[in-house]
Image 1 (cartoon, rainbow, N blue to C red):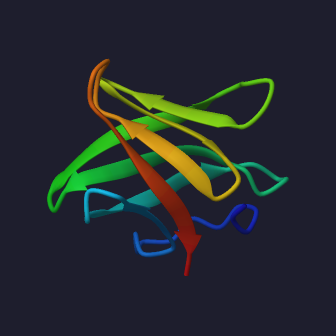
Image 2: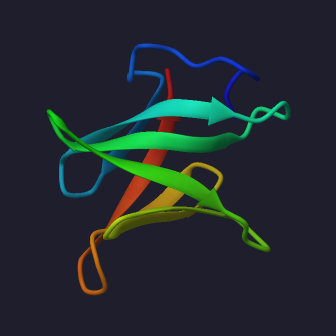
Length: 94
């Protein structure tokens, strides 16, 4: 959850810390009134971001973009770089 309507110029608010030893910042673009992240930029390299958007799920969440998606439930997530390349991550808010 992010503060409703709060979109910061900094990408350090939400970070995926993954088992591959890397951290992936998430930059919010749009946040719902309820505080749910709706669209964002997911940085997989220092100057390379992928636009991702929330895909409605029954349980948990999915953020999908071109060739990449993030599935999770609360603070646990799996970052998928295509069909055969995934890494377990934890989501942290600063």
